[in-house]
Length: 363
Ligand code: HEC
Ligand code: HEC
Ligand code: HEC
Ligand code: HEC
Ligand code: HEC
Image (cartoon, rainbow, N blue to C red; front, side, top):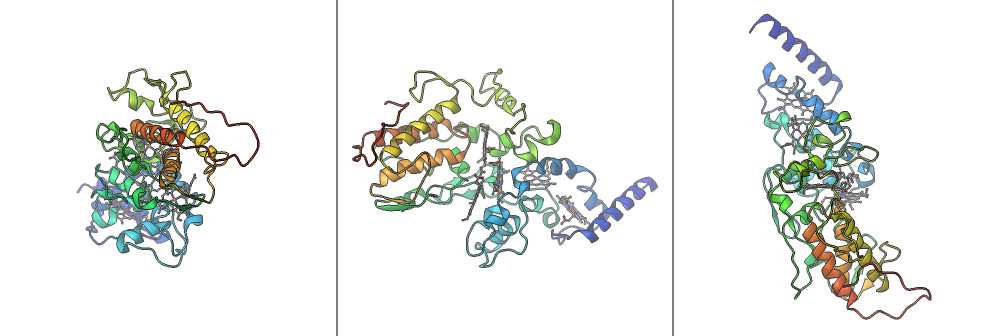
């Protein structure tokens, strides 16, 4: 080894050791040969940019870490690093909250000091709550947390008591993209398909949300920021759609022009706007049935499982939060089937005098 290289490695190691003294080493070094160069494979600048992007992510913000760090519930398995790792090991969480739970960070998804690589922990397929097998390479790591918390078929039945949190939770992106686990109306000939975005986008979630790493000013989009758009930032990752050869080269925004007037308001708008139009129409119908109020959920008992299913579908599309991007046809079909069904129900006798709500959709 030449002298300069030795000095550089020596200095870098010294820095590492000093850092190590101040910072708790959370990783497991067991499988790393403690020879100098093993450490420098990663610790010579490789991690800096990922860290810069990560700092701009919702994961790093730790927004709901304290709120969800409760004993005796499953919140922590997705909302903080300690809970995720504990659950991985034990398939349950402790009765007490963690002493100081950490935000989702490097060691949540990677185990570099255990494996000596930057591979993600969840490379095996991830089984969703309804048994559907999600298998898209590194995106399996995303599915481990971004999945619906319930199996819709056992979650919905006649005379169900719903709370204002009724629905799949805010995390049903893997179900949506897989075209599964919405309330699929029996006997109807709707399309409930898989999204082309799972198979044609390499590594599904990763192919879009981690696209173009390190190419954005301020590291705010793609890569380890996982952001597709940022409030106040003009730029977005629509270039990824344009470059896909599936959509036109001139695609500049996610809400690009649809091929039909799906919400029946007389104008063909962007795909996302069409989904919002359908969501609004379903909301009006659910309000007429007394199971939604001013666009908000509330605790009540719903006699008819299919009406509960329609409410579930409304929440399902809302909570996915991509306004149809993850799986346009599944979102559209769930809404269309729900609108048809609820529209066909007799209106219950009015309880409050007033004007009838206005509907955009007529089917
Ligand atoms: C496969 C890549 C990889 C290798 C090899 C590696 N590390 Fe790390 N190390 C990481 C990552 C990723 C982090 C988290 C990011 C950070 O804190 O910089 C980290 C963090 C650390 C930290 C901060 C600890 C903490 O809890 O935040 C120390 C100290 C450390 N490594 C020491 C070492 C030493 C010593 C070696 C060699 C024995 C080594 N690492 C080898 C990837 C690696
Ligand atoms: C299966 C994983 C999982 C479990 C279990 C889970 N969450 Fe979440 N939760 C998520 C994900 C993923 C998001 C982020 C979705 C997003 O913002 O798009 C989220 C978002 C949230 C939000 C933020 C909503 C917002 O609009 O900003 C709150 C609050 C929340 N969860 C509370 C809880 C509570 C309380 C529990 C336990 C009772 C819980 N979560 C259990 C995965 C989970
Ligand atoms: C939410 C899960 C998640 C977290 C948290 C995470 N990573 Fe990653 N990381 C991934 C995935 C997935 C890939 C593979 C990306 C790909 O295939 O393009 C990856 C790849 C990498 C790579 C290799 C590819 C590249 O970007 O050069 C590095 C280096 C890396 N991560 C470092 C880090 C560091 C440092 C942290 C903490 C600041 C971190 N990761 C946190 C999921 C995560
Ligand atoms: C350990 C569980 C976990 C893993 C693994 C994970 N996430 Fe998350 N993710 C969350 C939680 C929890 C939130 C919401 C945090 C909050 O709002 O409090 C979130 C937030 C997000 C957000 C921002 C949502 C918003 O409303 O701002 C995006 C985008 C995201 N995740 C994408 C991904 C992708 C892509 C992957 C895979 C590379 C991934 N996540 C892996 C748990 C996880
Ligand atoms: C085809 C590209 C694509 C794929 C594949 C994809 N997403 Fe998205 N996702 C988007 C776009 C675009 C948006 C934002 C829509 C907008 O801003 O209007 C989004 C929004 C989100 C949000 C809400 C974030 C926010 O800022 O409001 C979360 C969370 C999320 N995606 C997670 C995932 C997960 C987890 C997967 C894999 C199961 C996934 N996405 C797959 C493109 C994709």
